[in-house]
Image (cartoon, rainbow over all chains, first blue to last red; front, side, top):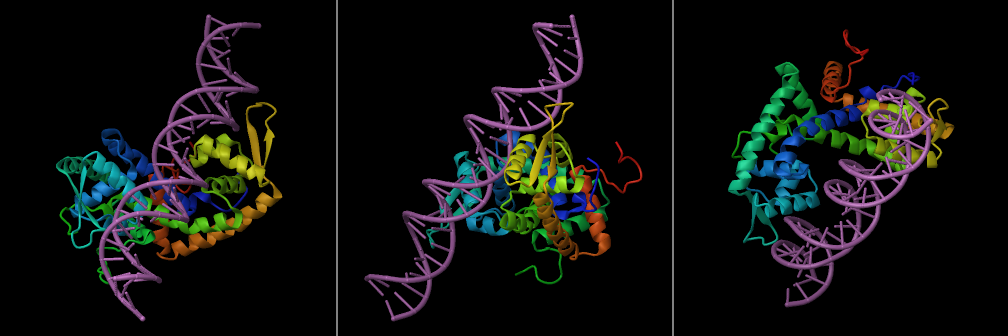
Amino acid sequence: MTEKDDFSLQDFLPFLLNRAAEESSLAFQAHYKNRYGMLRNEWRVLFHLGVFGQMTAKDISARAKIHKTKISRAVAKLAERRFVSRSRDEKDRRAEHLRLTPAGEAAYRDLRAQAQSYDAELAARFTPQEVALLRRMLRQLAGIDDPRAETGGQG
Amino acid sequence: MTEKDDFSLQDFLPFLLNRAAEESSLAFQAHYKNRYGMLRNEWRVLFHLGVFGQMTAKDISARAKIHKTKISRAVAKLAERRFVSRSRDEKDRRAEHLRLTPAGEAAYRDLRAQAQSYDAELAARFTPQEVALLRRMLRQLAGIDDPRAETGGQG
DNA sequence: AAATAATAGTTGTTTTTGTAACTAACAAGG
DNA sequence: CCTTGTTAGTTACAAAAACAACTATTATTT
């Protein structure tokens, strides 16, 4: 198993990104999985509703870039567990407005606290400047608008 | 859909890492998927054998942190397509040494070139200093030894 | 040298994901 | 108003991942 090639897999960005993502997800997963039996897409939906208050599945899909079938299934699970309530839009009866129930709010607040402390733990490995740069670069690579950018952003 | 909360999902590192990883994987996937009908774990195994020359499934599993069942199935596919050859270790007949066939080498060289140019494309979005820092931080988050670090590294 | 434990790798079963096709509601053009 | 097209969301089916249980071989203990 001696290295015979100059190509470094451990420098390849998609590989590094995947490994870093997997590693960090694994640790955080414990919180929403063990405490609430949630899947990744479920806490993502929960977080979006927690942050934005009320959205349709399409809103979430657009903002999080999660496919609509995943949203649909995540919402079904969350609604079944009474974390999310649904209400038809009266003007456009295809659309459904989603929001957290009190139980959903409670779970969100709990998980948000976990998230914040875990994020702080990760960030503490670097200087504040480095972390700011990291977030900016990741947003770039993820194709997410930088909220702090001077131009664009409002779409 | 008005923001009602101070928590920013788009700053949360595990979320950002996942989205960036997904985005970059998706783009690179086209190469090994369309040209060779490979799955993600298959090109990972192929790359490891390309870089290191000869390894057992266990070696790959340890280095790439891919579960052994995934390696097993990826190797089976690669062997079936004659990209990888297997040979029993005579001292320990449980273990199998894996290496690329000429066809496997050819595929590896082709995909390696794609990988290098795609990596360069991603890196070009930032300054060289930024990219170097990014790789270093991602390695840290992924739990990979930094080959350039002064201390440690050799285990 | 049995018996027990450990290791390399495989196989089987259950969950989750990915993709396509679907239903229901709306929108436009003739 | 009635075809044609579009959109929001769901459902069905195929592909892949996760996890547990398995075989075969080697190592360890008594």
